[in-house]
Length: 190
Image (cartoon, rainbow, N blue to C red; front, side):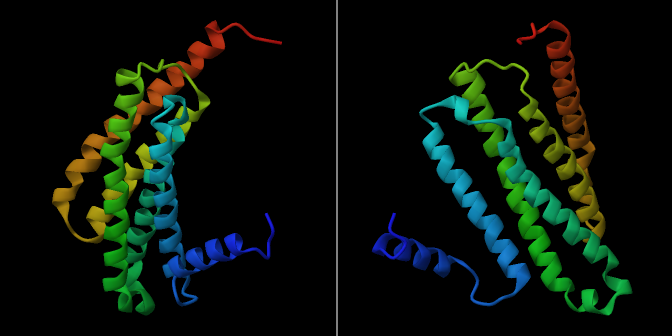
């Protein structure tokens, strides 16, 4: 591809329009997460042809929202002891809730896609080290929702981590059992 051609310039111009107009790091980070989610959804469209493309690390998209939510919740909790954070409290609460909602939105989509892959398309469910990429986001979502409920003083939200802790534990146990089964019973290839 000619770097001075019209196609690279058009792509650059399109991407530049999607980036924040300021050099604000928070806005840049938020736009990057939204862009990554957009790319992931577009890839979902492509994977309809092959269920093998839908691998467990897609759960990392949900985990990114959970990690951001955890960071925001911890900043909200620390806000009263730091004047800068106290001043930013409405902004922090808004963005933290936005990323929690975005992470939450991924969960039913990923469950539906998992059902589609393994039940509808009959893709075999067998151990793959990539399943650990699903376990961490489940645990992170549990922790971030617990911290968010504490940060915004919304005890009704605690019902989610009280149930999700068991889903995260089941995910961990299944990945661990698959690992042990693979180590003990799968023939080794040289």
